[in-house]
Amino acid sequence: MNFLFITAVLFAIELLYFKIADRYNIIDKPNHRSSHSSITLRGGGIIFPIAVLIAFLLGYVGWAVTLAVLLVAIVSFVDDIKPLSQLPRFGSHVIAVLLIAHDLHLFQEAFWVLPLVLVLLIGWINAFNFMDGINGITVLYALVAIASFAVLPIHASSLPLLITMGLSCLVFGFFNVRHKAKTFAGDVGSISMAVFLGYFLFKTIVETGQIGHMLFFSVYGIDAIITILYRIKRGENILEAHRSHLYQYLANEWGYSHIAISVIYAVLQLLVNGIVVYLDQQGELSILNSLIISFVLTFVYLAIRVLVVRKIPLKNT
Image 1 (cartoon, rainbow, N blue to C red):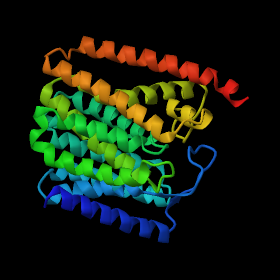
Image 2: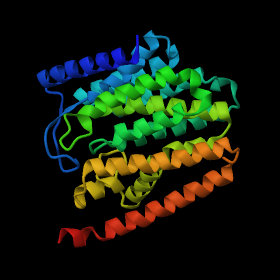
Image 3: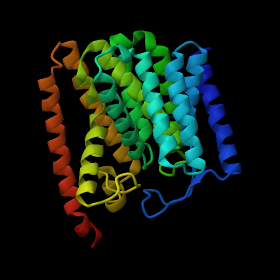
């Protein structure tokens, strides 16, 4: 099966899903926390786990990773239709991480490795899910991550899998990266993609021994962590939906284009990833250099955030 045919299959599945979502009213209705103003089909990101399933059938990926992605996708899709309690959602995340740990042989590592991976991956899954909300941001960011993994020589054997997932992003992006999105990823898309990307991040770290590759997710990570700290300081429930991310302020309070903001986030992450790849090739991706890059990014982010938030009252008057 060539990639052109895979693309056609994914397009057909997406269009079929639109008919199903429209028939059964699987939609996103805007509310006071939303960054969109019109009713939009939810769950278009269902083609992400379907792409993983296709890759599995073609022998591009193992059973453990496939099962991890499909498990969170199924639970998340049910949650998209009828909200679930925290327990089944959290439980599916834990099982998915354990399956990933099995694939990466982490059970054979030191006793503290698995708990650390559990915390980091579950944190990443939820951060990536919460960072959804404006047109294009999730899929463009995912494309940057996939492309970054694809250029690493250690993933040469995984190129068919990465290309297949990249094609699913392009198909979804065709309907999402536009002024008025046809569909949103939904939890089924954002969480399953988060699991997939998290798997490749830790696969990269395990195979290279370079923890600096965590910078591949630094733009989202810094925004998510600092936003959580601000919300804790304000006494908010960090598990509830909100409009406190920097990109949300830019989109909602400043009225900037969703697509422009999404492209900026993706391009910034692409630049960071380019630096990481270059340092890795030069043998200089040390912990010190990684920390320096993290501190610089955090300082720049905080400076921009403070400037944007302080001027919101002036913008609205």
